[in-house]
Structure formats: structure tokens, C-alpha cells
Image 1 (cartoon, rainbow, N blue to C red):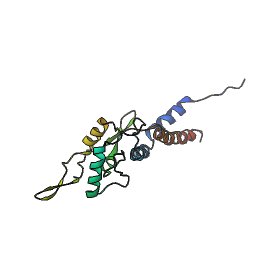
Image 2 (cartoon, rainbow, N blue to C red; image 1 turned 180 degrees about the vertical axis):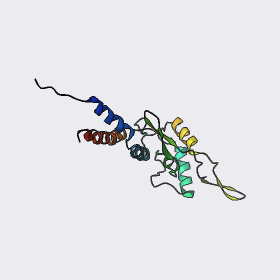
Image 3 (cartoon, one colour; image 1 turned 90 degrees about the vertical axis):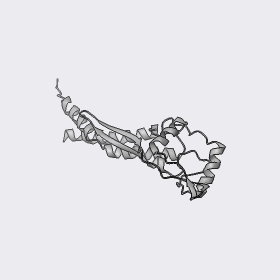
Image 4 (cartoon, rainbow, N blue to C red; image 1 turned 45 degrees about the vertical axis):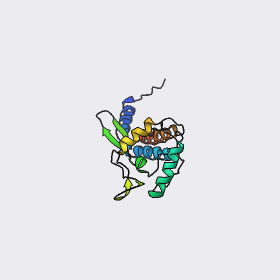
Length: 177
């Protein structure tokens, strides 16, 4: 009877190496791109459901403000997709934390202060501008209002999984060489 020896340590080491050397920047960029695309389509990547409809008063305000301010190309007066100026969705960033046993990717809204919007209301100095609010706070307000957007939907998860799988298989193929 023929005996086959199989060294599991080689496979284990290859998997550990693959995890440590995974293309985390590419995974993170793909994730951010996917979140932005789904959000601009008016769907929450967290829940997979369409964002709550805008109230009539909100639509009226957005129509008025759109005449006074530069808007994002995905903007629509009645479109609930978080893209009036595009500042909130564009502020989505990631940070990579390398630990001793794993690498962690965190996605968050960069808390930079947003540009003020022209409101069109008159004051002695001319047109009045809105009060400044930072992106992180606005993201929290949107999430509380039924529009959470920092998360990954199933298609995005499969995209990220595919990137990691191909990297893992590349590392495992190196064992036999």
C-alpha cells in the first residue's frame, strides 16, 4: 500500500501569509466605491432597502436651494440619495489598522466641516449662508432619519470576497513550486 505524506504546515503558513499580505488597500477602495454607488442609487447598503422618501417640504427646500448652489451630478430634487452637493458621500474614507494577528479596515465619514450653502434669505450683507455642520454629524443625522449608508451590501461583500479569494489562491499555488 502506497503512503502519501501531506504537510499541513505549508498550507497553514501560506494562508497566514495570504492574510497578512492581502491587498487591503484594493479591498478598501472597492468597498468605498461600492458604498458610494449604492448610496447614489438611493439604496441603503446597510439594509438593502431604498432610502425613506423625502417629505414634500424637503423637496421644496431642495428645489429652492438647488437654484442657489452647485449640486452633485447625481442630485435630483425628489431623489433620496444623500447627494445634494456630494460632500457627505465623498467624505467616506477608510483607515487600515495592522494588528499583530490581523489587519482591520475601518470605514467612516471624514469629520471635515462642510461648505456652507447659500440659503437665499436676505441679510444686510447680502445672501445668507447655512450654519456649518461637519460631515460626521450629518452622517449620524441621516442614519437616525432612516438613511444609514456606511455598510456593505451583499454584492459588495461578494466583490471583496472575490478579491481576497484570488489573492489566497495565488499564495496557495506557490506551495507546489
